[in-house]
Each structure stands twice: as C-alpha cells, then as structure tokens.
Picture 1 (cartoon, helix red, strand yellow):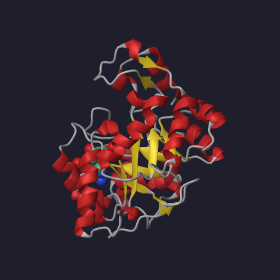
Picture 2 (cartoon, protein in one colour):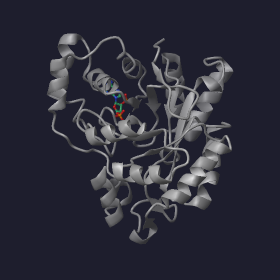
Picture 3 (cartoon, helix red, strand yellow):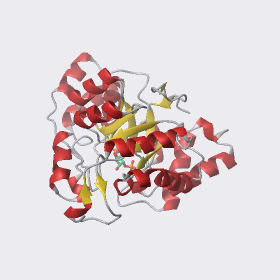
Length: 315
Ligand code: A2P
C-alpha cells in the first residue's frame, strides 16, 4: 500500500496527506459507484478525501467511510482527513453553521478536517443554472468568515480555508480574519501554474491545494490538454512514467498538495506512485514554458454575470 507524505497546516493538528482523492465526477456518479471507488482508494492507501456539498458526493463518501470502519480497512475515523466545501447558496452569515451541519449529516461524521468556502460569491437562493443575475451578489466576507470561525470553535471542523480565492480576496480576508485560512484550493496544473497566487500564499503562510491537476479530462469543465500533451508525454516516456504521473509529480515539486480524481483502480494507484523519483532541471524548464490556459470558470457554472466574470478574471 502506498504511503503518502503529509503536511502540517497552520492551526490544524492533524497533518494533511499531500494527495487527496477528488470525488467530483461528471456526469455525477451514482452513490454505489462513488462509494466503491472510495473503498478501493482506501485499500490503495488514500487517507485524504475531497468532497463538496455541490458535488453531491458527501453521502457516498460518508457511506464508504462507515463501511471502511466496519471492515477494519481503517482503524479509526481520525486516521482520515476529510475536506468539504460550503456552497455559494449558503455563503450568508445566517446559513453557514447550518450548512456545515448538513454536510456533516450527509457524511455521517461528527467533524470534518477542513471546511472551505467554495467560491467567493453568494447566490441568494438554491437554483439550478442558468442563474438569474439578481440572485448573484458579493460575498459578505467578514460575516461569513466569522461563521466559518464559529464552525471551528464549535468543533464541527478542525480547519478552515477557502477555494477559488484570488490574491485580492485573500488580502481582504486576511485583513479581517481572527483565524487565518489554512489553505486555498485552486485550479492548478502544468497549463495553469498559478505562479503569482502561489508566491502570495507562500508569503502569507497559506497552503495551496491544486484541483484539476490532470485538467479534469472527460468532465464538462475540463479537457485533454494535459493528458494528451506531447511535451509531457515526451518527458514521461524515457523515465518510464505516464503523462499523468509527470503532471502530478510537477505539482508535488512545487510544494502544493493535490486533489486528484480517479475512480479507476489502476489509475488511482498509479497516481500515488510519484514520491520516489524526480523531474530533471530540463524537464522542469520545458514545463515552465507550456502555454497557460485556465480551464475552470465560475461563469461556466453560474453564467456570465458581471460579478462572476470579475472573479474569473482575477483568478
Ligand atoms: P478516471 O476516473 O476514469 O480515472 P482531475 O483530477 O484533473 O479532475 O482529472 C480527472 C480525470 O482524469 C478523470 O476523468 C479521470 O478518469 C482521469 N484520470 C485520473 N487519473 C488518470 C491517469 N493516471 N491517467 C489517465 N487519466 C486519469
């Protein structure tokens, strides 16, 4: 079974395994499929799982964790690091704690290890896209973060952080936070390297987690630009690795953690085999020159509203 290195985050006692298994799939997988994939991942050595209210995978993850404990695949819930996220329909101060409790109920857990604000925006109602413009409003950063801090103080969550926050949003958050965010989970891969944001986060002691590390191939929001890339394939071939492993290893060498999704038994194992070799300086140089294109946009989720486009432009 693979052993995954962990990192201690600011303000969080339990170290976070540097690769977590992503559970967002498109079209959304049914509960049994996701549950079976999580159980397989636990057998492969994954101990960190990344979900979100919006992915619809919290219940399946919760069932898999309960089953893993029954089967003795893990000794205790405390051996797992579970991350979930506050959806934009709940980013109003009065809704945060209840939304957190709802996620815990879905997960059948007493606490999650990390709770993130999913996007720095608010939807006044829970609606399916396309979202009417009048329902999109700016995030009440202070009010919502105070409630995130309350979730931590109540013991519902062990750590709090954000996702899809730009340097501008982080500046604003840091100026009001009593508990600073432990991490910022953003799109990052060889084609969206996030240099500026990573430098900023490093300076401020905020860890970065990469989502869509493989370009979210086969999803509505992703494509084949990483897994089908010749430069990465040419680096991988002579060292006996796959293109996916080169992309994941590159992320690891940048000092970030990774939320990587595979529901396939071989591929999820392959994605853990990145810790006992390294990329050469020439390989790193080639990767640094890859053209940069952003894959995930909030506009593709909520529609091209002015505030949404502003958030996308910033990230
Ligand atoms: P699958 O679940 O069938 O393995 P990301 O982590 O960037 O969101 O990308 C997820 C996509 O990449 C999924 O479609 C997943 O498909 C696929 N994938 C994950 N690992 C690999 C791999 N090692 N090789 C090829 N495709 C992979």
